[in-house]
Image 1 (cartoon, rainbow, N blue to C red):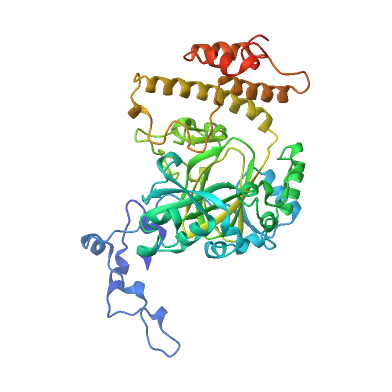
Image 2: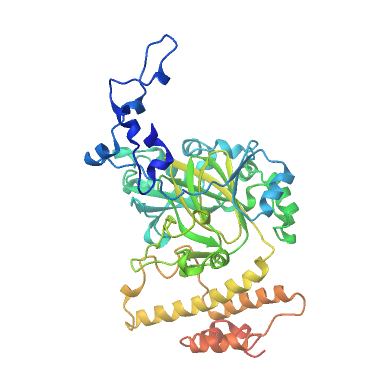
Length: 464
């Protein structure tokens, strides 16, 4: 078995002549003789010579680059241990934190037959496309109840649309469905008992000890009132992005999802910059608090599943298969891409406000102000046929679920409040420079004066 040793896979393997007969079926090495004295050859004694493998076209095993490193996994950590893990700023998976969750038993079939199934929701559907996680703007949105979507998830083949309501037109075998980003407080407004099926008390106690979350996050509810539900079919997911605010805890209640994570952009620059890692932030499509990875000309994510380039050290990327009963911690600003790997998946997450979020809200308010002005100007030009509609990317300028302000005055008020919170007491700030910038962006400053009333035109921003 000398060719099975690591030395054999070097660039120039050497075959010792003294072992030339080890491949003969008529020779049984004495070291493999059994207790009864009957020689029994090993499989490795009859493996073909390396030159025979090459002649037959059989690929020779190679020692490729190392695979994705494993995240830390812990079972039933104490509050202090969990706090220490959070403080490291690295992702980890904890099991045993959901033992008291009633939501751990939720399934599509169970939701369809329970009072929770009457909840009205919206399902995003995409045609099945292997090796791609499409953007939200590339899908079709259908109104349905949780019961209808649960039956659709359990269906298959020609019976995919039975009792599916509006989903009947979308065969289960041809589409992926995702009921994503559903705020549980709104989704189960008529069934408040459903919020008690979630219990983040253990996580909250550890997060506060770690000093990672903001001091004002003490009021975060331990039940599901500030949680989000994600229910989808195999292949449903989210393209590469990072969240502008908070740290993220994800509880996998049913099924499995594959998470791929990379350090935030600041860490990427420290570890080698543009040449080391291909993820680049973009605000197209625009969504408040979500920063997507830059897209290619087709409008799809340039690396929708965070594929690993050969030039990048493997320690830059984590890959996690999150299974039912496990909880994943996603640190602040970490890139992540998610895809469902089981037939269906149900997860619940919550974001805890981070200490840096106050300053981050100013940044997001500026982005919203400028993005809204540019998009309003572009839409006016398109209506006047000055800009061809085909120039809008496939993913759209704005995510379908994102609501832009009617006027720049609303955006200025948002920015004013964000800056005031950073400066503490002292009133609202003055923003004349922002107003002048808006005027240069296709007359958006005029919209601010007209649409925003005195607040932007003659009030704080304009006249202040």
